[in-house]
Image (cartoon, rainbow, N blue to C red; front, top):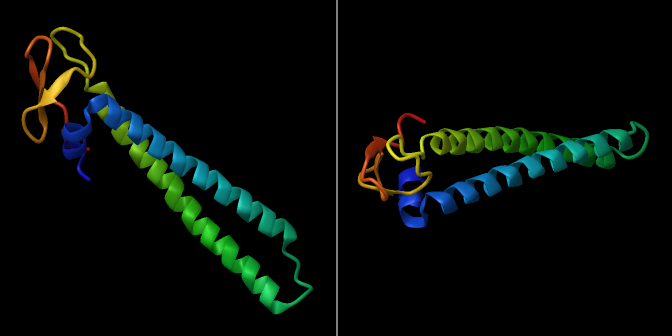
Length: 122
């Protein structure tokens, strides 16, 4: 979902909080996947059934793919939230996150009615 739609629906503070929670959930998922890879690699022994070896290889590959995706998604969400968080302060009065969206990318301060571009190229 585009940030402007969810910011309009939730408000900036709640949108920002939810973005950070979602980003950190992806981080935890990535850490769990790294732990699963380490555990499977420790258990991996080439003696035993081929089915067991195949199961460990599948778990390692799936955990690797999910872990890489999770950590990249974490970085993406955190960068987006950080960029918009830095631009959420009114330059005229210094109020943080006290604005209303007037278009897809422009906002107006609720305190002093100053307008600025919040969402540029993310």
